[in-house]
Structures are given as structure tokens and as C-alpha cells.
Amino acid sequence: MDSVESRSAGTLSTEPPWRWRAYQEMTAARYERGQLSVRFADGTAVRVLAAALLPPATEAPNWEALSCDTYEITVPTASGVVEIPWSTIRRLTDAAYRKHLERAAADQARSVGARLRALREQTGLSPVAVAERVGVTTEALQSIELGQAGTPLTTIGRILDAVGGTWLDLAAADG
Image (cartoon, rainbow, N blue to C red):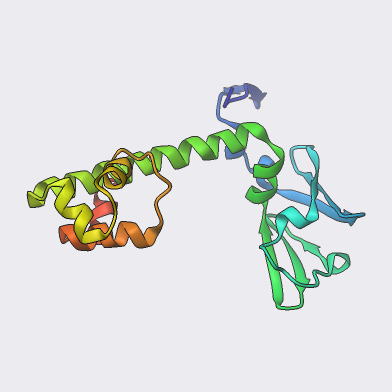
């Protein structure tokens, strides 16, 4: 279930909790034996493997010197400071929030795919012609247009070039 009913100040809310400020606000963070413990303003306390929060190949994180503000945790490392937003911690510790993000990403992929297809059709180009210009198979292009593929931005850019479109053309569908 994506929403939680909550009564406050005499009103009933069915908004999902990730829209609530208290769900997003971190009040404390502590590193202990490879895990980060985080407390949120809504009273939730979570633990997550600290290494899962860092980009790959991050060298020498100084977890003892971490700092926590309302919406992010910062950790000094040998190559600079790493910022860990509240959303990363929630994604790793809250299955409902993770599913929400996955659905949103799938919806976005379908929207981008549909817009790419519309742009291709406006130019009168066949899937075969565009696929050849882009350097992908026709099946791969059709999968992208259906929003079924995790498509790198470079490939989307090549498709836009092939159909004479721009990144703004993709945004036009959302506006």
C-alpha cells in the first residue's frame, strides 16, 4: 500500500508518507561497526550497511567525522566529501518507497519511449531506418519506444539526433 491514513489537526490524509516532511527529515545519524543508524523526524529509526551508501571505489571514508543535517549526511573521504541524501537511506530501508521509485522510473521510461516514437513517426522514419542511424537493432529501438529498456542517456540522445529532435522535445510531452 502506497498511502497511510493519518489524522492530524482534525484532517485525514491519504498521502504517501514520503511526501511528509517528517518522513524526509533526519534528526540523527551514527556510525557503529560498519552500519549507519539514522533517526527520522517521524520517529523511524533505521540501520543500513554504511558501505552501501557510498559510490563504488570510494576510498578511506571517515565515518567518525560524518555530519548530519536535515536532508543529508556528509562523510569526508580521501577524494572529497560524499553527500548521502535522505532518499538514498529511505530507498535502502523502506520497501514501499523503493517500489514507488521503481514505478515512477517505469512510468518515466514509458513516457520517454512514447515521445521518442511520436517524434520518429512525425519524421516519417521507420523503426528500421532509425535503428540503423542509431546503431541498435530494430528490436532494441522498439523496446525503448515501449519503455521496456533501461536506456542510457547517450542512446536516447542518438535517437533524438536521428529523428531531428532535441532534449526539449522530450520535456514538451510532460509540460
